Figure (cartoon, rainbow over the protein chains, first blue to last red):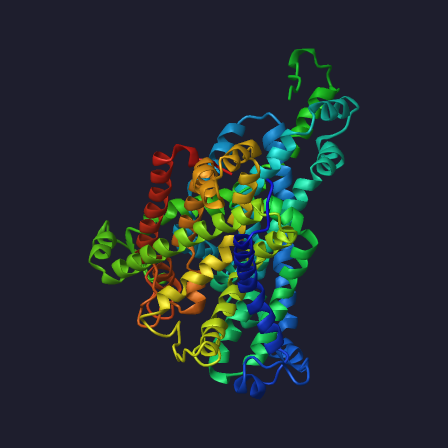
Length: 278
Length: 314
């Protein structure tokens, strides 16, 4: 489209910037408040810090037990990702490329979950986990998260698998390659772009998961970062230690920021493939 | 894929043919590839969903023996003013969040797609950023914005000479409305991307001829872009609606239904019935869960029926 820069264009541009500012400004504000002392903050919330109080980050790290909760988060996110990713990928391959009895039934049952909102299953799921003695356990949470639901990812990956030419598999099979070999040597390398997208979304989803860890983990030493920040906010209402909480929020954002900066293209492309966030 | 059938009668004794080896090996592969995730899905997903129907018919605090009470929980629900209040709050949130999210996204997507500004690619990425943030971080950011004494919002208003000491999340009159913005703020970016991708697929020639006829941006947006985008807009409306009805985490973190129940939503009411700090009632909580299930599925079916194009499964 041919465009002249008119007065009205400036207004449109301002609108775009305004939305950008609503996103950036609170983040930047929290960052610089996190570098002030509480006194400075109470006195004037706009003033920039006189000396940068990096000690707030140190305090947040120890006060909110970031060391421990980071380990818990790594274990939970890592475990769920590895197990979930492996099974989603191999399952997608078996269900799209192999013929066997009951395949249609399995697909049908899995597709059913597209119509299940899931929220009504929270209570029975909890009772089930309790009966299996999997509550208050990060490993239990890993099992629930990695095996529970992954239809969107399964569909995404099976789409990828369908586009891989069958000849490759067939010639490998004639050469005597086992299905495992075919899967790991042919399918996985060719489906890597899809697997990476799924991995990124699983990471974001598990890292951001609040409700699961919040329901299932009762022992504070097992808290993930998300639950830890929720508790930190509750504590802050009594301690009025704002700057430490600001620093904590900033620390909790770091993994999201890193993943977003590294993979923004895949994230933005992948996001349009479905309402993955929910 | 054609796997040759094992020819039983031509097999030599003690010698396995390669096809047979292949079929044993395939069985092992399938056992490893399909069984664990499928059993996991049955156990952790499907079974609890089915069980929730049964739980809704129980009177059970989770510890003592459950008592089967039939439809009592549903009758109780009809007379429970908290359920109706929560539903009303869900409705108000829906009415505010869905149009705001969709309209802002459409508008921003249009500007980003059709304005020749160099920074648009960067803005698109920036707009998406809140979508990767966790609910807790988003909620806490907004808690900082809404604080009465030191919050960003009141401080900004003070700069314009408006002195308010409103604790936006702490007052019954404002709390529910204050929850709208975190929902919108966290959701718009995704729909900007979705709508902007859809806009890119609209042929340019359509716009060019309209521009020759002297159409301005508003005419283009309302006469060409929005009508052509209708199916994808319906998908957006559906997703945002379902997300708003379901998403009680933000509410849980920011207000936990307070003050005085003025922000209680149905999902949160269910959550607190089951996991809250006071009395636990798994049966009644499940009945409320069933009501949510019906509302969510109903919304989806109604949308699919009235706007057949929106029935896209991603």
